[in-house]
Length: 131
Image (cartoon, rainbow, N blue to C red; front, side, top):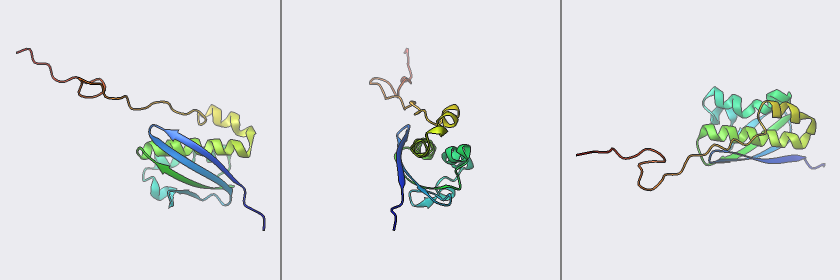
């Protein structure tokens, strides 16, 4: 019996990390042991997570198995999308132009700004009272 070929990639967004495995299959997308439709309740998150597969026309070619941790659902959907994009590049390097134009290969660097001492949050100050 021939060993199944797996492609692995990591995606990050905000504080979320997604480990993604691609295998040849029927197009099933599983995130943390649940179907993508059950894991991401909003359709926008479902669309974002599977966007690389739809753009490259390989949604029925590969099965996706992803494990995500940290952050919220929006960040996890972005992390899964980046992970899938990077794994697809390992499969076929010619998909790079399509994914790059859609902005799916760029790691979104926006993170929460840290809280500064003497302030209520990162930039908000405590209320000033003159008297």
